[in-house]
Image (cartoon, rainbow, N blue to C red):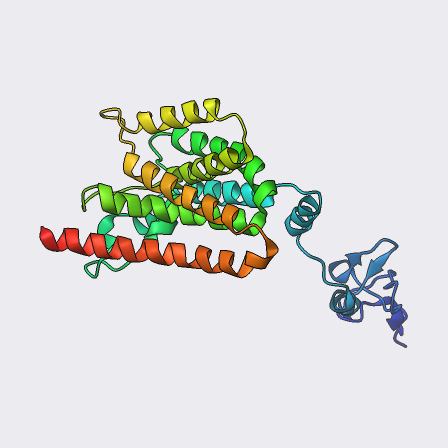
Length: 287
């Protein structure tokens, strides 16, 4: 006479050859150690776990939740985001074989039909020299200082527009004032744009300009030091572009002129792009 064996209820429902005395807390089925998922109380079988995940409310990533909370408190999240993106790209530049720097740096030739890659006029803003760590450190520190001042004053959308347009203006400055073979990277043009906008706004508000003028003059002068390998052309272009954006924002402050403000902020980068293409094409063609 053969032994009927243990009660089949004491075997895992997914693995009939594995004996277990542990039950799923939701459906009551027996599960072996491989099939158990720890729950706040007891364990859950695989099917119940899938059902629980399918019906669970969708939650946003923690980083997005924190950013939304920071935005609600009035923190300069655009400034922090620009710093974070720039730092992330800088880390990518260090990865051998990835070729991030070669793929994103800017040269006037990229504004012509010879090498038509005009987007580099903006992507180069997020690159920095890997041979001089202070390049990114100084730029991001300056962005942090002026971003905390300007972003709450202008609003996040306008501040982002100011930064990007200034970066584009810096690249166009290289096209206009530098040799066609010049190669540049860095956020300096965008940073000088923030300074230019701040000068325009401070003058209108009647603030003390002496220290700001000194800071601006020192930073501009550094670009002219022989052998410094700093593009004063990008600094000058970004400064002019930022000042123009600041002027637009000041002159279209009333809500009734909001449409004009948006139109001018769209027209300015288009005009800068056209200038860059025309001047680059003329210079390359004249060689």
